[in-house]
Length: 288
Image (tube, rainbow, N blue to C red; front, side):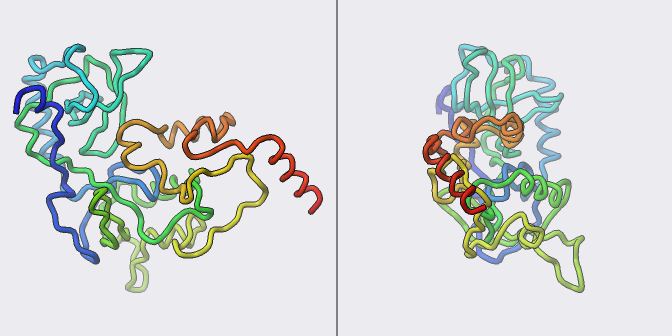
């Protein structure tokens, strides 16, 4: 493998290092949450690895600094963020500033922006160590209306999992897309000898519904027509990891300013037009 192809090669993934079986149980930590249908988990601690990475790049980093002419989308790198070093893949360049880049940190399952001065070549010794973060989704639940997850549901899921070591039971394995569908259990919440799953708690608290139950219809009518049948599965893991979709925080901020759905998600929503929307409003008025 020559030097240039090495930098663009895919690292092995932790998903590929195990023969996953339904009903198997593992201890996991949640690394990054987009929503309950798209998040990243980790099975192995990375503290020792991160310290090794810091020791090496704190000593050798200057000689491995990336030059602008060397950077290409898809290449592996190391990013210095808040005085810590992370492995990652360059997924997008900033059109307005060619010295800023979006990096997918594949040991933590998150995308972040990094400047050129913070980027380094990934040394060949770190290519054999698999990317630690594994794609996951909560099993047997989805949104109340089959559309995108409400931010309140995302926030509640984060509250229930933040900073905890949890138990994951495999419910289904999506081998081609490397996704684990899981039931999540927090052993600290044991009640009368039973441990309710976080999946079930989201249902009981009104943030989700059982997957095979019919969708709960919203009150009123929206001027925006969904273009996908099961919007809660979008955007895909691939889109998120490649920086092709806004983050949950960005979406919440934009929706607070009443940015239309079809502007935020042109691939998922279509404006139905003034006539259709007014017609729906007239129907509501007549009903009232």
